[in-house]
Every structure is written in C-alpha cells, then in structure tokens.
Image (cartoon, rainbow, N blue to C red; front, top):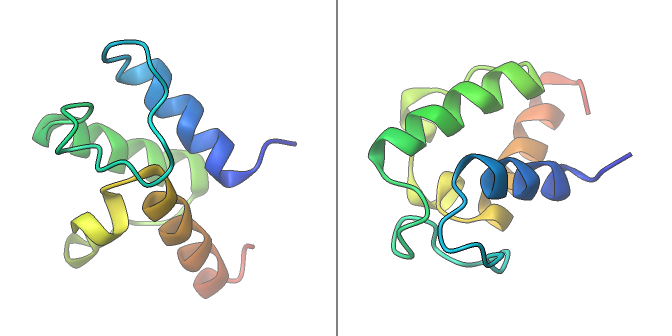
Length: 85
C-alpha cells in the first residue's frame, strides 16, 4: 500500500505535470508554478474525495497545502483527528 505522501505525490505529478520533473517533498508548489489558485481547488476536492474528510476554509493555507510534505502532514493530522487513521 502506498504511503499518504506517495499517493499525494502521484496525484500532483499526474494532475499538474509541469515540466515533468518530480518536485522535492518540501518544494513550494505555488512558488514553483506547479499549482495555481485553481489547482488548489482541484487539490482540495481530491483530498476530500480521496481521504474522506472536509478541508475547512481556514485550513487552506500554504502551511497545509503548499508542499507535498505539508499536504501529507495535514492529511495525517486530519485523519488522526477524525479517528480514521
């Protein structure tokens, strides 16, 4: 079974292919031009559908959604909070 970070990385690479290079886990996806503001909405929808939790408006911040590592940590935290981890 793929790790949460692997699942997120695969989604990012498939949905936002960019220049074809794989971003490092801590690369700022917005600054690197991999994801734009519309891409953030796509990411939020995918997170909700894939992991089964609601991304609250106040959670849509760079710390949570700005990098693959940040997204992974956010997902793990939300799953732990909801008791589904």
